[in-house]
Length: 218
Image 1 (cartoon, one colour):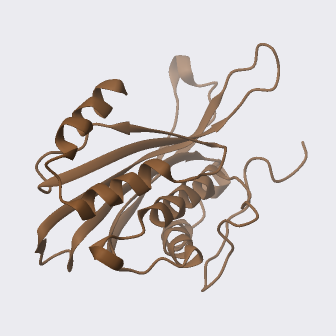
Image 2 (tube, rainbow, N blue to C red):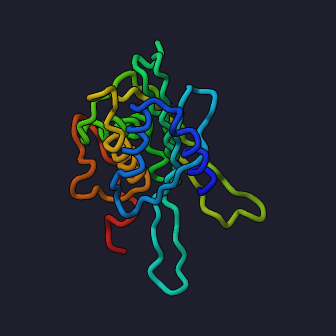
């Protein structure tokens, strides 16, 4: 993490002011306590300026020998091209990945791809952040075990890859703290956590799947 921060510090003076302000908003955003987030090396060929974060939704063990468990993880990359990009319809672009393992019955739901995409758009709308040109994919994959691994239960993974153009506010700076919070809402949703008091609430046709963790007493 220190190496990533040092690299960013070295390049910060060369970056345009709107990009530096957007990055600072990402660094200072207040997020749900279940979210653990760190800077990570950003891709160098997608835009003149880029900043990346990796995050995980962590369930902390309660006993003396209990281990923390990652319920979902992902990556968010902020791209900036001061000259603009015709495909972005703006000078900024957010590129994200969110993934988690699902319970088998949830993975078999035929509506899973549509519902998962609605989690993303619903999270952005719930945060009230304007955006445009969204695109992405929802992929689910099943794992079945045989031979020496036959005792394991089948597993289903979901992966949501998405990008969108954040609307630019005063000074050409998008509200990246709100965009990051919305993306973290998506991570918590795929992790199966119940919505926090001020976080994502179903609206605009968003259909929730049954909560997997923390919603019902065991």
